[in-house]
Structures are given as structure tokens and as C-alpha cells.
Length: 207
Image (tube, rainbow, N blue to C red):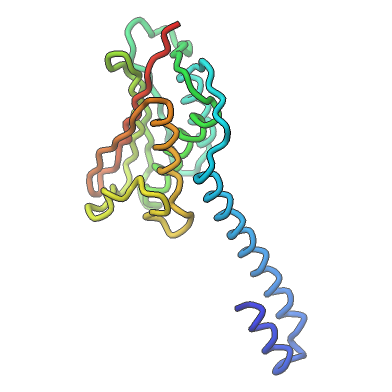
């Protein structure tokens, strides 16, 4: 479309060509970047990177993911660990077996998703907790956003589904693939104008 506009300007308004070339170049660069991002997202979803499983500290991954977004304007991020005998303020070793990079990306996506669900006119809060459930660690990621509409609840993990005006809707689908690939599970609870909580269950690692 931009090229067609440029072609018409060449014929009808040659005196404006410099201005049109600059505008067209800017538009084309933005759209090429957008197409590149779309292609990258689909490629990442269709063929996930090779898994490099190892024993990692879940507490470190959560803390690092929170630190990525701590400077987000208007958003407060809190994370707490509710486990017996952990009250000395240090980061405990919550050993799980999985791909560190993919896990970091999954929790970062959940935090980012929560931030994007919060309207600009309210004070945003993201709460992340880690607790125990039998032989698993249970991580909850809560926001105080608008919640997920009833007609979209069944589609939220579908590839290429998004409630946002930007992006390709692959974030939560990739999160689900990552968690389930580790033998874990993910679910959510949501309420209109009250927010959404995602619950991620990951097996403890026993040496």
C-alpha cells in the first residue's frame, strides 16, 4: 500500500516526493520489523529451541523474572515464598528439573501478560507466590487487571489467540507448552474487573 501511494505521488505530486519517500521508508521499516517479529514468534512456537534440562533453582528464576519488570512505570511487583522453615530472608534452593531459559521466558511472559491486563488508570499490582502442594511447587501469578471475558476463557491458551491489539497471541501457548513439557501443569482463575491468577505446578526435584 505504501509503495502504491508513492507511485501515485510520483505521477501526481512530484514536488512532494522527498516528503513521501521519508514517510514511506519509515512505514516500510516499521512494517518489516513487525513482520519479522511475527515470523519469529511463529517459528519459536512451531519449533521450540532444543531443550537443555538441568537442575535449577525455581526461586532464582522467579526473582530474576520479577527484576526484569520492577521498573515498569505504575506497576508494583511482589513475590513471596510460603514454605516451612524459610524465614531468614535468603533465597532458598527450590530445586526443579527443566530448561532454565525456557522457564525464565515462561514466567516473564506471565508477568508481562499480567501487566498488559491492567488498565492505565489504576495502580497495577502483580503478586507472585511460591508454595508447596504435595510433591510439587505451586507458583501463582496474580494481577488486578480487567479479567478475561467469559467468551474468551476457553481460547486463552490457543495459538494465535490474543485479547490485545498487538502481538500474535503466542505467549500463553508457549508458556503452556513449556510447563507441560516439564511434566507440570498450568491453569487460571479470573474475575471481571478483579484480575486473573495463573497457577503453575512444577515437580520438585529429588536427587
